[in-house]
Image 1 (cartoon, rainbow, N blue to C red):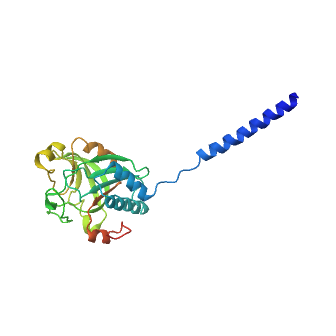
Image 2 (image 1 turned 90 degrees about the vertical axis):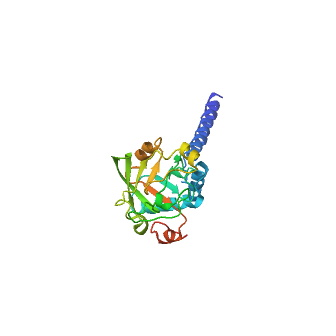
Length: 232
């Protein structure tokens, strides 16, 4: 009788162990990474001013830059120039999780327009913003304080960014208060000018070979960029 009970108990324990092992194996199964569409939707949910096309284009550019082994960092900074300057139109996102780390304002160049940026240039002296895919470079301290140099990866559209001193810097004319008073942000000489309250933190995060995309639905850029799989 005792042996029968022991046998039954051992059988029950063995069955429980099998069930537990099966349960653990199910929970330990690898989770498939989110698709580009899923990532774009997650980013859009957290940064709703950015258009879905701006986000998907930037994610595609990031994928191509990484494939070229120009970056190994899971960050992309998206600037949607189709959004007016008085609204938040810059997002820094983690491309693995889709988490938006910063969502803020950014000014465009004087040569690109007033509230909306509609004109873009790669030429020195235009004071215009440049479209395209950029790679962040080194930091430095200049007349605008802590700043970040950029290398343009689209030769026809931003290839002279480094020579033009198109950088990320802070500016007094980028703030909610300025936008409320003037109906728009101030304008730079073509740089990505950010609010003084967040610029240092953003520069510290994205420095050193991360991808930044200045987006606008410009057919020439969308067709010509080697970092975009699909045309506009």
